[in-house]
Image (tube, rainbow, N blue to C red; front, top):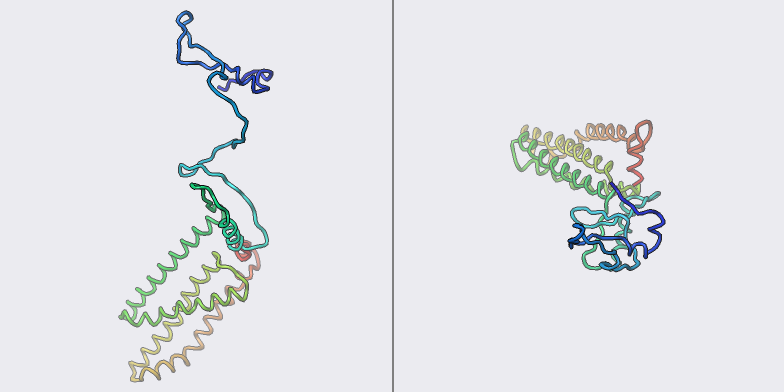
Length: 243
């Protein structure tokens, strides 16, 4: 139940000072609490205050919302961080990013964890397949080298590191690992037949080049519709490509 004064009794500050307030004293004759005007126990000053106080993690927060268009999210956030860094905040105040930026950072963390787990599992599978802990290292060394092509492709296409590109990186890791397995396994078989290491590696590079190129081109052309955001159901890829 909400009780309010009549409209004619709440038009000015004087009306507010006359609002009766119950005290802790009891009138002996009436058996009721003594009522005094609010102006006797409080003072009034004009000032500004928020209409609503929001809290997050037991701390007061003020939310500033905004939209962006025509620029990647990472570029917008980077520029905002640079401008906010020049603002001298009072002690106890700080800026935190939420919304899409918070979701993006959380997603990047999950994707990084998935990539790290994928590398670990690939190494364990290769170690069990080759029966050695050293030979899989030759295959795993090709994984960081593939990131050079990723950076060059993003620079040429003016792309950004987003969810779609990170999914592509994970797929690239699998493709690079498969190509390296073909080379190392072929070289191992050649060495078992009596060839030296150098000749075995040369033959592996020559004879395994065609299947490596064919499987790589098949994957590239298969992913082109998604990369170019063509056809139905490509709205998500197009949206992330423009960020």
